[in-house]
Length: 251
Image (cartoon, rainbow, N blue to C red; front, side, top):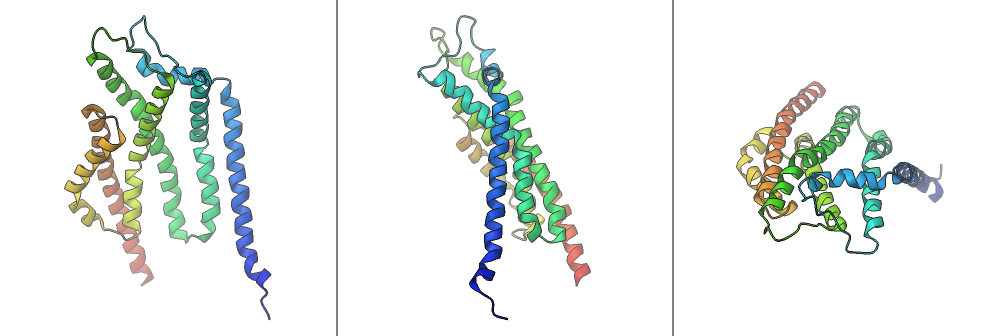
């Protein structure tokens, strides 16, 4: 039987069509959530600004130095929140696209890892909001000259907190990255545990890069990163032992 070029290209075309459909679904769900939240955009921004607002003197507040800032800052924040709330749906679409090409044991590992990655990212952002923000804002507003009124621009504040949200969210994914490296055979649990001193130094270096130039926020990011690395090594050992047992059973 002669195989035509159309027959060869059809599977690729089907994959591209499925990818397009899933991307469209992601865009639609983000827009739907954004439309539902947009009415509360100013309230969402006020909630995000609360950790700083409580340290500002009563006679001062946040300001807008650009004409469009009062609209664009809440708009950007609401869009960011819509993407965050859509994360489980987005990961589900990604999972549905790649799952058919995975082995059974890979699917068994991928599902909890995907769910854990969402929870850990949310956990990192919550840690930043409830623990890091009060500490660093309290520090920043207390060390300035007494004759300088603290009035932060709303756009600058948004850029600052989004950077920290993203930094802590990504940092809390360290256990997932550690488990994946062990599962992929890139390194063994004992091998990565021996590199612990380098990991600790690397955590503080990343803390310096990803956070503002103050020792408080750097330490508040570096220490959780190191502890999460230890969590990743612990669960990585369990995954490593399971993989070895499966390989022995197959042999």
